[in-house]
Structures are given as C-alpha cells and as structure tokens.
Length: 294
Image (cartoon, rainbow, N blue to C red):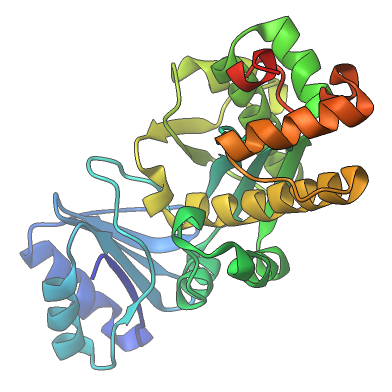
C-alpha cells in the first residue's frame, strides 16, 4: 500500500498527533489542513473534515498501527509516491498524448486534485493511460471530467507544424503546451504546485509560463504518471487524441493508424496520392522522418 485515507473522530486528533510524534514525525501546519506529520518514510495530513491521508513509498505498517489506535479500515487511495518528492495533496498534474504519433494532434492536459478527488479517482481505477485499453479511456475520462478541475490543450497538425517551424524543438513545443494547460488550471482554481513527467530541461515550462503561473512550484520527474493527477491528465489527453484520430479517419475515408509504423507510412502515402502532399500536412506531424519518406 502506498497511500490510504481514514476518517478520524475529532476526539482522537490529539492522541493521533502524539502517536506520530513518538514515531519520529515532524508536526507542522499545512494548507487547508489541521496539521501534517512527516518522516523520511511517509507524510500524513489531517484535514479539517477529519480525513487523514497518508502517503509514502510503503505505508501498510503505519496503516495497521493507525487502525489499531483509531479503529476503522484504511482505504488505499493512490499510486506510489515518487521517491524524494514531497508533493502536496492539492496539486495539478500534466501529461501529453500523441507525441510519438505521426498522425493526429498533440494533446496536453492538466488535472487538479485534492484530498477528496484523490480518493475518488483511485477508487475509480484511474492510472497511467498506457496501462488502460483505449476502449475504456472514455469511461475513465468521464469520471475525471465530472469531478475535477481540468484543462485540455489540443494542438492540431496544422498548428503543430506551424509552431514546430518557429521553435524547431519538440521539447520547447511540449513546454509551451504544458504551460498553457497549467495557466488554464490557474484561471479556474488556486494551485500552488504542478507535476509533470520529465521530458527536457526543467526550466522550459517555467520559462513558458506567463504572469499568473510565475509563482507556481513546478516539478518534473521520470515516471511521474505514478502520481494520480498526472495519471488522470494522461487519460483525458489520450481521449482527446483518440477523438482527433477518429475525425481524421472520417475526413479522409480511411482508418488512421496510431504510432509511426510501416502501416502508418502506407496510409500516409495513400492520402498524399489521393489529396496531395500539402494536404497531408493537415493530418500529420511534418518533421517526422515518415514525411520525408513519402
């Protein structure tokens, strides 16, 4: 178990605080919470609602101890904590879809989570989209969109090619998209921290942020999709990318394959032959080697 929550009676707050202090935890104030207890192994936050949320690399043992002390049953609520990274429960996660696909848009999404939506998303089975069958993506995306503050930035092929021609660097383009998604979240809710998967120099997103986002804490980590907010962002980004592929399939009257395989090349050749290579630019990422092979 890497994360769990439990409802704590108000009469148990002091006893629980003493328990954490005896376990070597440092007790401090926390945003929107009564207090936070932190050790090298875990972070426990008690909210004003009486909800206790514990996160760490492995918290099964401490969960058992709290259950003995306070009663009730711990409920697993999240994905593994990222090593060496203390992310507040209330934070945004960003991820993209379509980066490695020749056809279709590049989609960057951001999702904001708090203590309630963290539990809800985990219980709904939200995880990295790469571990979810595409046929189930829409169902999970609906859970996220109906319960969370979110943002989707869709860069369709025509706009993608225009931006890439200006930036001449995929990481800069990604950073621009992630920054826009974060800015959109900040328009809708207060958010002090954002986490994304690591794809380049960490300063790229920071430099792409505008005035509203200059004070937000940004973190980039490898395998950040272990975080529930990043996982949720990957789901809704994937859903939007799949919609883009479906629209292209309908427009050109052929099933558009994903990825950058030999089938992708053959499909692109057919579209170029039927409509023109210039028209093909409205459906693909033109800087891919696949385009020069046509």
